Picture 1 (spheres, rainbow, N blue to C red):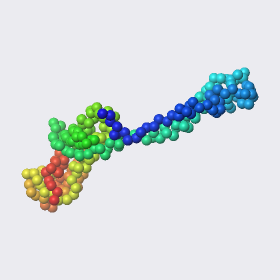
Picture 2 (picture 1 turned 90 degrees about the vertical axis):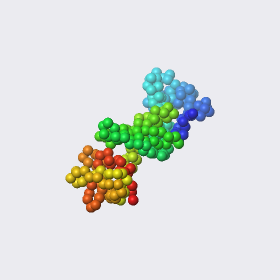
Picture 3 (picture 1 turned 90 degrees about the horizontal axis):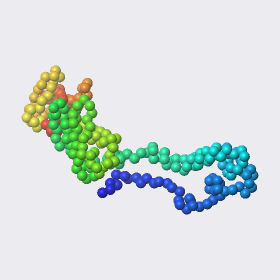
Picture 4 (picture 1 turned 60 degrees about the vertical axis):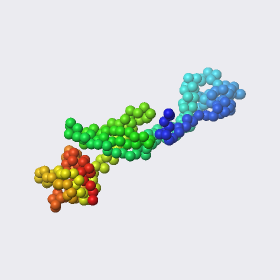
Length: 255
């Protein structure tokens, strides 16, 4: 099945109409050197090829090679004037296939999160594209380097127009959505897990038991760019750091 939905613009190749190409005119004949000068060489038209291209080339002082070069240059100038504006417009407004498709990316879901052997997180996702479900994963999501999306969409032969630029934009698009989702909004939360691990201002570990209420004050990043959460519990300030930051929304529910 031909994939057409993504190409929302029709590119028009401008050509001269056939009747114009076949139509003979004095101007056209002169331009192409097909009209003989009724007055003969040297009469009626300038013989200097820098001033005119209309001579029949029979004059003793005519440089036909220079005249031909001049003819080509003049025709190129005419063609540039005819097509130049359109060509510039197309080059400056290159079709961005990702932007054309972005509204068709829907229903992003986090399926599961695993701690990998590097102790970073692998985040497995699914999403709908053109009303079809695809799957993907960000490996080492919270690692040192920014993760890249690996998805079966990129290897689907039906979408062969997806190039490296498209892949990068898709990866960044979903990454930003996930990044913002992991950040809990300020407010009060009820602890759902048996024990919520936190650290106090001295770096000491503490456990907050199930059913207790904590107040999220905000989040920040450390010197290594790692996100951490700041919360208040019994008039003390605590932090949730490392991988636990990304599980907070699973372990606590906003009141």
